[in-house]
Length: 254
Image 1: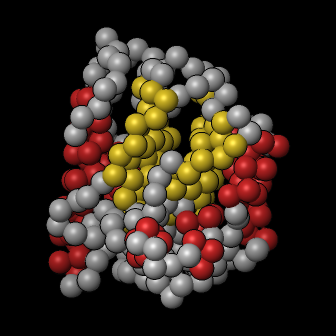
Image 2: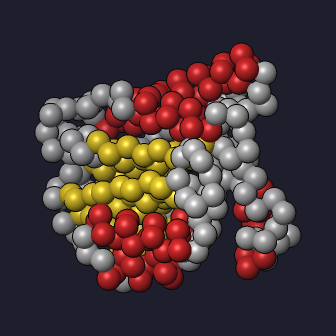
């Protein structure tokens, strides 16, 4: 891995040039009895993440809890490279734990998605596996920063499926990557620039199944408070049935 990022001098210094406000909400939804979503906010470290236990597999709640638990042990390294390597190492640890748990239980897989964001001075990194997403709202436009690791996404990329038909495909939510899904963890990374006024959303697919990108943009523009934006998005998903767990985490830079 190679990241061309600035260097902070001590682990205790502010990680960004911005004042940051953030909030997260997770809801079990209207159908399921267990919330298999989890999220983490580490304000001083400028680390945020959402994890979604793999639906249909055993102990999805345990899987997402494991991912969040390991991210909670990331240390405040002075160098961005060290911090990034620690995040990857913690996710690899979580992958090994979930692989071992599945073997002990005789389960096919105990897994979880993860979407993680780090803010480092004027730059940041998005790290992910699975179909939980990261969005950025800037200049009244919304941009998806992550790319789903799913069967339908591969079909769309190969030109075998139209984007508008993806949601109704029988394998619409079959993942190709996740924490715990394979012995070798395969993560994706995206380095991003951070600007004043940026608003970021990390969310599970329980939100994006029920609320469209244009609707997310409208809510993010109308609700200036991070907690209120999360609440309105979650409530809209619940109003529409929310058959899956729903999680939204908003980060504002000013």
